[in-house]
Amino acid sequence: MPFNGSSDGGANNPAVANEFRIVYLCSDIGARKAALSREIVLDILYGFVLMGEVEQPNGQVNRLTIWSPYQQLDAVQMLIQDAKHNSARQNYPFQHSAGSGKSSTIA
Image 1 (cartoon, rainbow, N blue to C red):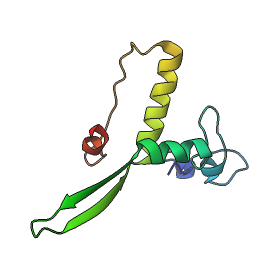
Image 2 (image 1 turned 90 degrees about the horizontal axis):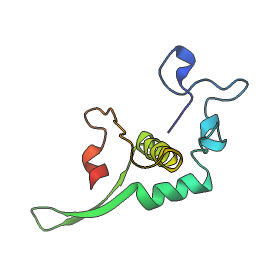
Image 3 (image 1 turned 180 degrees about the horizontal axis):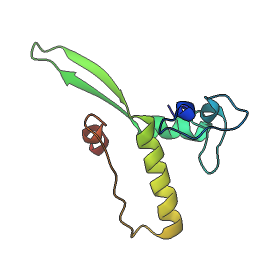
């Protein structure tokens, strides 16, 4: 979740004056909606939760739920917002790291 973690000089969200570090959960900050707003929660449930079943070699079926990291949701929302304002004919490079969920996002 997008906690306000930059008070120690980190690269996370900037501090918001006179607010708790979790202000991003319940309040809109600039153009970004609150992480727990109705719109964002519905977006997460609709497009960023992958549910499936995996059959084990012994025949047992395990159900799994994969929750995409908040950063993926935030990046996709910013991309959609930019495409609406500047046309979809843009190049959007993304930097990612190992284990960031690329394969699950593509699926």
